[in-house]
Image (tube, rainbow, N blue to C red):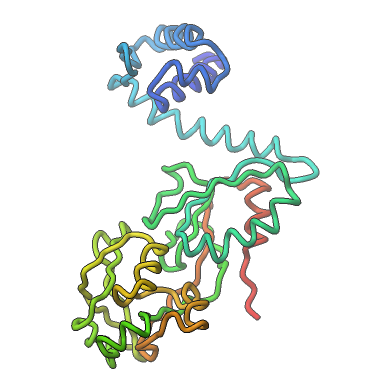
Length: 298
């Protein structure tokens, strides 16, 4: 294949990902007819049909799917390496795509970004809030933030927080009406706010420990939620008990809005870690963020 066809392959990959000649042309800064001409030339060069074009969309042929699977990852690697080379200047520059949970983003990432970004105007950060164990390579993220025990072994992981202490909380009014659980097994008699997380494939079981004994309790209640902010709002409204990170509700414990129970049994989780692929050269912008987030124990 001629060297100039690398640009043609880049055009094909963009058409395949966008599902449209028009959208691909807009991203490339050329006309749709130019994209169509490039695609015809590439198909003639390869001797195979790569796409089937209708009036509304573009679909890949079987051969097109094979070419995409072979060349798209390689072109992504080339783009990443070129991006690194372009950033070799006095100040880091470029974009960083990060996936994180809302708790990690709110308590550890965003405060650091507020300090960092004003000094580096050429750095852009795109943050995606997600509770699942995102494949950051497949989803084209530069980094992710999750608990340390959730990070794959082939990733480089950097701790950005201390260990996370959990707690069970509700309003004083709730406990006045329904009593205070004395043991985790008593939770089966209470109205517990459930969390449905994609990581666990269903309702999250509340985790407890006493010494080396670790156990989970399947709770029940009238309300199930899939984000922490809504769970907190529901708990403050007096609907029931919630299981969450203690730091997340600390202001409400301090002002008496919430009351915690079962502390001797509440589990401790490994701290949050920022992780990124070990086999990919990392940009200066990402390394700047890694250094800013790195946790230093007191």
